Image (cartoon, rainbow, N blue to C red; front, top):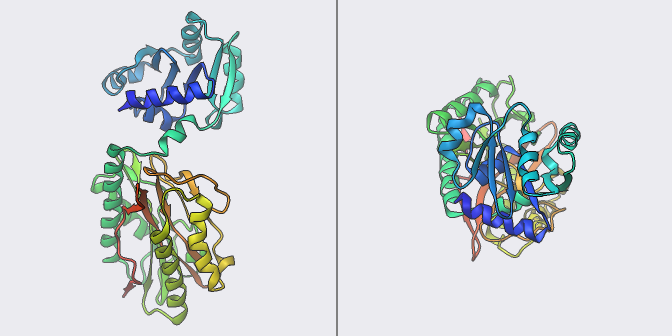
Length: 357
C-alpha cells in the first residue's frame, strides 16, 4: 500500500519538477510510510526512499515501515539529510511549506549548506483526498462507532446534566469501543449555547425545552468520523421545529443532489440556497462541508470559495446549520463518500427531530 503511494507521489514530484522531497508533516509521514511514531522524516528522490528517525523508534520503524532504507539520525536530523543528498549530487530539496516554521526553515538553510530549499504545497494532501478501499473500510467503522455513540448518549441525556459530563460519557464510550480518542474536542452545546457553531462542552446545565447540539467523532485506526445531531430536551416549540425542519430539508436536498463533477461551490449552494429561501441565509455562516480522513478537516471543501471538482473516492461531510443568538441553533451532519454514480452515506443516525425527557 505505501509503495503504491510512493509511486503516485513520485509522479506528482515529476509533474512539479521536484528532484527530492522531504516530508515532515506527521499525517503525511504516516500516510506515505506507515509509521505512527512522533519523530521521523521521509526523504524521497526519483530513485531512492529513506525513512529517518532516532534511537527511540528504531524497533517501531523496523516493524511499521517497509520499502524504505532506514537511517537513524542523531541530534541534528538535517545533517543526515544533507549527507544523503550530497552523496547523490542532489542540489535542491523540496519541503512542505504549510508544515515548516520559519525557525525550522532558517535552521535547515544553515545545515543544508549548498542545497537550496524549494517550498511546495499540498503534494501529499492531494493524494490523501482520494481514499482507497482499505481507508474507506476503516472510515465506515469509525462512522459506525459514532452512530453507536449517539444511540448511547440519547438514552442518557436529561435535564440537569452538565454539558461536560455528557461529552465525557461520549468520549469514554468511543474509547471503550475501540477509538484511540475523539476526532476533536466534543461539542455539546445546549440552550442558547447551541447557537455557537463550535460550542465545545462547558459547565452549563442542560435545561428543559431547549436544543442540545452534539458534534463529535471517533478517531479509529488513524481515521476520523465527524457527525452532528441536534435534539430537544423537554418540549419543542414551533420555533424549534421550524428551524430544525429547514436545516433537515437543506441537508437532505444536498445529499440527494451532490455528485462527482460538481465543484465544492456548487455542492455548498445545494444546502445554502434552501436555507436562504426561508430567510435564514445570514444565520448560516460556515461552509456546507469539508474533507475528512486522517485529519478531521482536510481537502476538499464544500464552501462558497471552493472550485475543487468533487471526484469518486473523496470523503466529505455535509453539515448545514442555522444559528440564532439568544435562542439556539441546529446543525445536522453526515459523512459521505463520492462514488462513480453519486454518493454513499457512511453515518446512519436518525435525523427526525428527537425529543428527550
